[in-house]
Length: 240
Image (tube, rainbow, N blue to C red; front, side, top):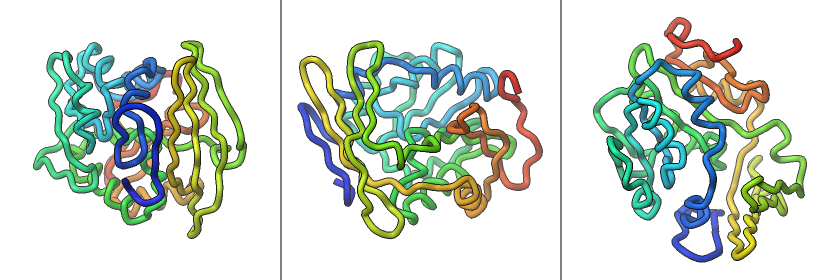
């Protein structure tokens, strides 16, 4: 386990406390639509932290070529029966494939890791694998992620996500406990997260040689970044 991370419930638990069986049950959300609207058609995508392939599959169906990376072999085992996907088992921070991609994805709020050195390494991996005229898609936490606690949401598919508590863990980092409750089983995850203001987030990108090209959604959770010396991206978000 990574320091400060823990998970409970049936099945394999990854080093950051994620339950593989829980993610295998999750429905596909709006992410594939956001991604497809923000990048060139048939782009080569490097998906960092692909999990069980919940987003990978819809991207392949839309004609993208995907290299799916995850540090958990148990997660990658679920990315099967998907034609055309290339799978790589590796910690993101150590990844060096020796090639570049049109699009690099860093979703699941990974940029908010409580470990500042790890965040720097994640963003360096993004920049290292980014083609000269490519883009990085990053998912940030929502504005009130650290403040509106406790809170819960029931998904239309029938499970409840409950952010049960958030406690200071030192050095500006918070420790979260989240419960995922289904009619037949409950999983929990404890993890550490560092809140980042817009200014802090953009400074972190700049440190890795990146800059914001566009905030893709009204809540500014999804962001498109490019190399710091690059002009406007080749693709414009729908409705922008």
